[in-house]
Amino acid sequence: MEQLAGFPCIAIATNKSGSPAGDAAVDAVVASLQPSGVSDVIVMVHGFRNSDAEARALYEQFLATFRVHLESGRFPQLAQRTIAVVSVFWPSKSFKEMPELTRSAEGGTLTVRDDAVEDAATAYALDALERFAEEQPDNAADVRAATAALMHTPHDPALQDELLSVLLARLGTSDDDVAEGLTALRSRAGHEVVASLAVPIILPLAHHGAEGGTAVLGSTGTSADARGEALFIGSLFRSIRGRVGQLLNMGTWYTMKQRAGDVGVHTVAPLVRAIARTPRVPRVHLVGHSLGGRVMASAAATLAGTPPVDSLLLLQAAFSHYGLAATVPGREGAGAFRAAVAPTRAVAGPFVATYSARDTVVGHVYAIASRLAGDNYRAIGDARDAYGGIGRNGAQQTNEARAIVLGDEMQHYALDYTGIVCVDGTPDDGITHHSDVTNRRVTNLFAQMMAAT
Image (cartoon, rainbow, N blue to C red; front, side, top):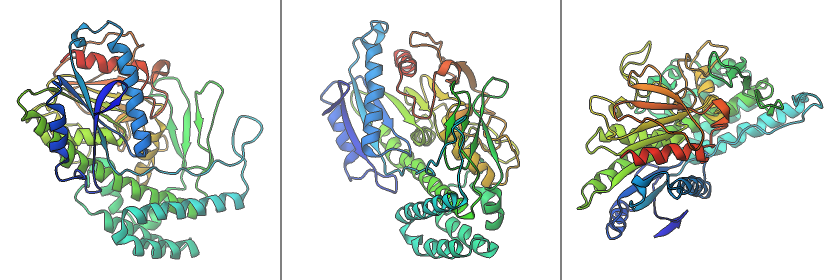
């Protein structure tokens, strides 16, 4: 087996339907674990902004700092364990942000000319179109035609309506989780959606009631003050062409979101079941970052405790902060992954989710989704928003959840086996951005989760 940070590791790849790329892929993984006397298996899944190389680097960095804790002598419970890793690779797509333009001399803010904004917005829209066409080839001709017509006559509301219609037609309705905004988006006209993207979106960089700055989303560049207290993501989408690019980007996002759920159902859940059928059943620990958190929540909800996994760590997960709720506020039914919590808890040991107000990636996606769905908040993306992300706000409206603060790399945690522990990485720069999940403070938390099993 390949080695990652000194741990034996076997990879499993999926196709675009979320199923293993090879017919016997799950059996091959399980067979490779048996002769080595493995006591614990860590299954890791990356998010939507990672190539295979980037995902591998993320896994290796996480495991390297985790190994530091194992070798520290602080976890005698783990000294005799034999740990192996299963690294999952699924075909996700990176979202290219609008290009950064010219900064002013003072304060790091942006000064742009109208023609520069127009050129950048046009390039952005076309790049987003190519990504959507690659991911949705059956619908590509319709989307290309609708986009070309709108780029030629951008202020025509009928053409704006047509673009939204063809985008939604390919997405289907099988994964219309009301807490993710797609259901509400289907009820709106395209010209309303395009207009809504021109309205300022203010994203706080600290949780409500705490100190911190804000971010303006839907922009052409970024800047931050010297202390990092505020993030300014430039000017608004003044150009309709730029808003078209954002709309196409969200089409790609919803495609990736649906695919992540499929990976959980068709690859990770069958893998866990196959491991549970082996003669010497090892402990299974699920770790998912970003949309990989959605993969793992989907897998846990699919398993629904049959069999249970031993621990579950959601790292800055990209799904609704109501995803685990018994009732989604203002709507009928439970969150999409409620079956991971009740009636049978899917996790035998610690169930932990990190979150941070500094996660502007999850914040950005859900702020835009909120605007597309017609949410009228100006200050958007926090725990009060109808369309917020768990990686930014923790689990909301979930009675089983409790919140604690991420401590330093020596912090001891009391991790119970009954609820969900939401760990806030906002204070003291515990988690400073979406991918800041491999630092020793985070892997100390994971080491304690494993030691508790």
